[in-house]
Length: 100
Image (cartoon, rainbow, N blue to C red; front, side, top):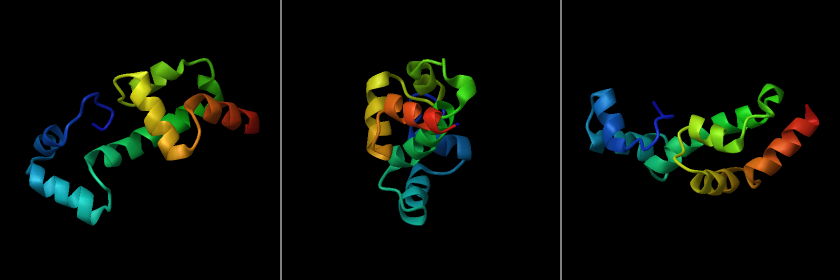
């Protein structure tokens, strides 16, 4: 579900059959995330890191990976990825594939 482009907390709450308020409380207080976006982006960035480090996906465009993990465009993906890892997706891939 977290890969769904444009996912909102309301949509996820409906899917989980709970109230938006309850879900927000669980994400913020119980899981310790700042907000829904940081919660979702953590999962998306983790999946992107795995794909970028996979030698079998070395020829897959970064834009395709961004779409596959739920980002609607490259700009927000690049920004979120760099904020989370300190590297751009391109730099992360270069380093990861040099190690493998």
